[in-house]
Amino acid sequence: MKPDFCNQKVKDLTATVEALEVERRELAARKARLTIPPVDKEMLSGILSEFEETMANGTNPQKSTFSAGW
Image (tube, rainbow, N blue to C red; front, side, top):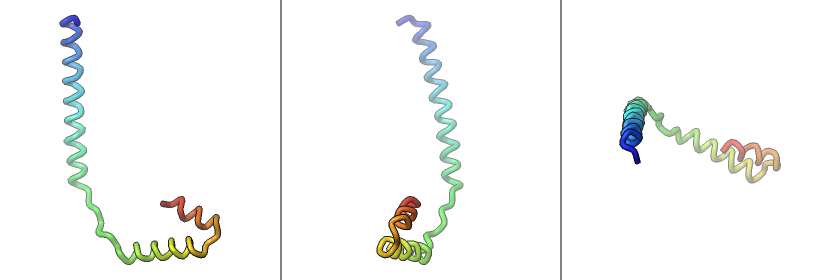
């Protein structure tokens, strides 16, 4: 491999690594700012009840529609 070609490849890869490091820092900062709301157990219980009711007694189109949302 020619030295000039090798040097250019190293420069290109170094630039890629630097760009990825910037992106990694940005993503880490975004992650740090994320807030996940607490789980609303009452809401989840209601969804589960509705799901169970639909699966037990619903028509096939209702079941299909409900399942498509999952």
